[in-house]
Image (cartoon, helix red, strand yellow):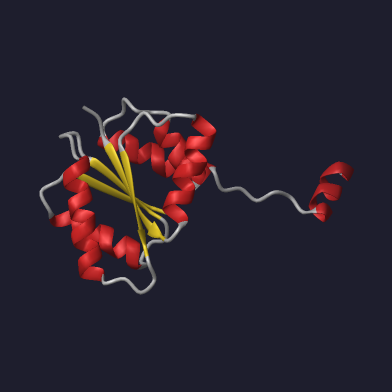
Length: 140
């Protein structure tokens, strides 16, 4: 058994991120499903669909929920699942670096994998110096 992943994101972000991950890694060592949420979705129906996906995914080691934007509809749907019967951890701010990092640690338990997701997402964001900053660095 292993931790499973459920991506709940704005359409088409989840599927595109998953495709980019497959394109980068070739294979996915963890079970994963994507639920892309349309802007005008029926939230209760979407919550029920997400619950069904959890039932399909959960093999007993828990499910890591990844959403794109904290406080938006997909994140709120994911948050509503936290009171159910599954062992879940929710991490928002999904990016490609986060998902690739998670897939590189398939043996981690749920809390460890959530930490890998969080740190992978953070380390995947950087600000490159502007031309002016680069010139200052070169003259220093």
